[in-house]
Length: 213
Ligand SMILES: CSCCC(=O)C(=O)COP(=O)(O)O
Ligand SMILES: [Zn+2]
Image (cartoon, rainbow, N blue to C red; front, top):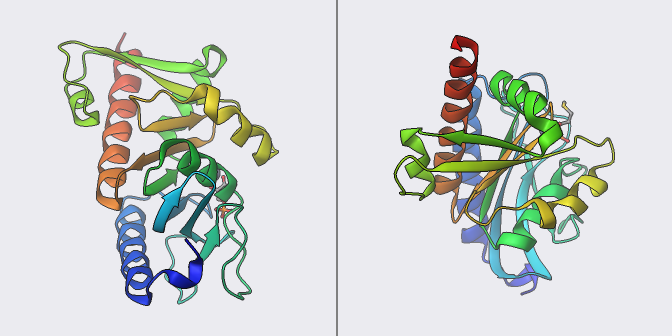
């Protein structure tokens, strides 16, 4: 699908969703400094051709400005003339879209996701078990154990993106970057937000369990 074929109405709906989510996450202090980025896909999807709205790079997401988002293609090239630069981590978003066909991806840096991804980064996953909210990831097995992948936090974003296909767990809608943050996704913005909330609850609980001993 060409970008030109995507309706103005769909683009506006997506921008409105992103604005709302950005405000909600900012209210939770999920955007310290200029960290974090958000994206929502628009139009039809094929692994080689898709488009998404993404936050502009280097902005403090807690601050509202008229120019917070831009539309990019699957190569992260802007679809319209703009002075904005897409998030430096848009390449990670694009790879996750390509691999999963999901429709929204949200990335935040929090104290709990940093602590746990650093502590378990060497093994390549965070394993958690016996947490009721695991069911909210769509995994209903009793007392189940899940592994949330952790990727190394290379300075070169492309080299992180290249590791995504082999790290992805098809049952788990999220990936941690070691000592950095989490990318969580869903079939729409609401589901991606839901998954992110579940992950962050799991991280805080797991951290507190470990510290309690
Ligand atoms: C400010 S922390 C380093 C970049 C980062 O990890 C991040 O989430 C924000 O990058 P962006 O290009 O989206 O502003
Ligand atoms: Zn980041």
